[in-house]
Amino acid sequence: MAAELHNDHHDDHGDDGYHATVKGYVIGFLLSVILTAIPFWLVMAKVLPKGMTAFVILAFAAVQMVVHMIYFLHMNAKVEGGWSMMALLFTIATVFIMLAGSIWVMFHMNTNMMPTPDPAAMRNM
Image 1 (cartoon, rainbow, N blue to C red):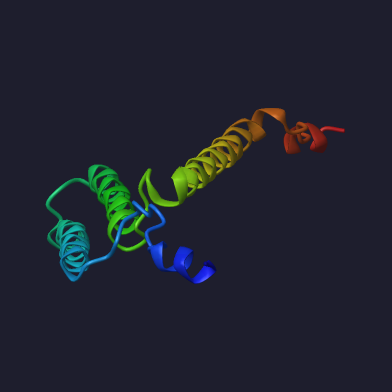
Image 2: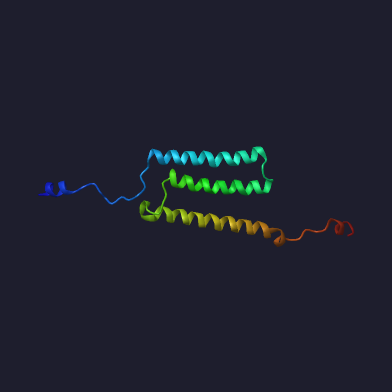
């Protein structure tokens, strides 16, 4: 009887997650190459001013990170019941808080430091 129940069991566990294909890897690779080549060209050809080039490179880097997460890490809202996406959002929030706090501290550090004595006033003593 146990054998009959086991024969009716199929190995379908309702896994609706992403399944990798060669086409997906090729698309991800081509997008990564394009998203790397364009900023490289912008820097080497000096097409834009330095400040604008830096922002464009940061934008391309952000898009490339998303491409890597989708095509190579296979992260989406369905994988592992959404827990991998929640872990990613928590990581992004934590990194943002740490970076924003560090920048805030460094920006205000000059005004919050103890004043140093004026060398000219020290000579008159």
